[in-house]
Length: 339
Image 1 (cartoon, rainbow, N blue to C red):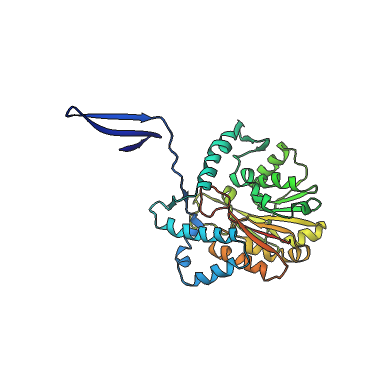
Image 2: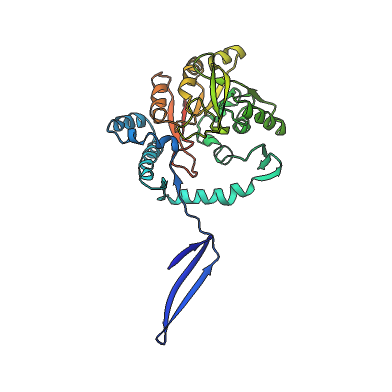
């Protein structure tokens, strides 16, 4: 009989020697890792809708024109979401060999090399942050290696929508000789972004303390670190603070500063549709490569953002990217590029 106790394998068995039962126990000092991923709470609330027959048509529409890898990823996310929903702990266990190896690599090669070197200061591979480094940004580099036109970004500016503490901007600046304009609306995150820029001497990152939306306005945002949102999850913490922030459009910012945009990364916790409305002119005239990195926040975003951009008939090629982490759908992103 195998027993798991405090990370050890206990092998418990009984032998019969000369008619006498002898119990043997061997304690193997080996840490067991149970590989599983969990269900995204944002998607969890949409599962009744996902189970409706009308979802079939939306799935077909979403996968049109996508490569096989992207199509399989969409099917995998939907299938695993439904299976995990039936599990009492909302977990999914049937991972591929590639996924198991990737999770082991995170445990062996990524997390042990994040060094807490001072109060509110962490270092990984030469990148300094006031908070711990995120998997999707530093280990996977936002999947940017999947882009086919990276060289075309070098002489243009990059727009980082949902800059958080400036972590993405550190990576993005390596893909251009020009500036990275990083938009972060909340005071708490913006001040941490200034620390990130200073400690890394990242002079080409331009911090902008504004949100980007469909029209100039002011709105109240629920402040929750990297998950701050205008559309808070039903599972949001009751202790989250609210802050009134200024909203502008990307189109007005680009026009005012006369920017040539090569790449846009968007991660604004379910506010992507509003952003796209205020960025349509820039997207239609300059056709930048884009990463809409948070289509997992709602079922509508998952199904509708790609068809919306397709309807503009700009000639974009689309692909779906999901880093291998501990979730079924978190950090699922839509790549859009002109080939």
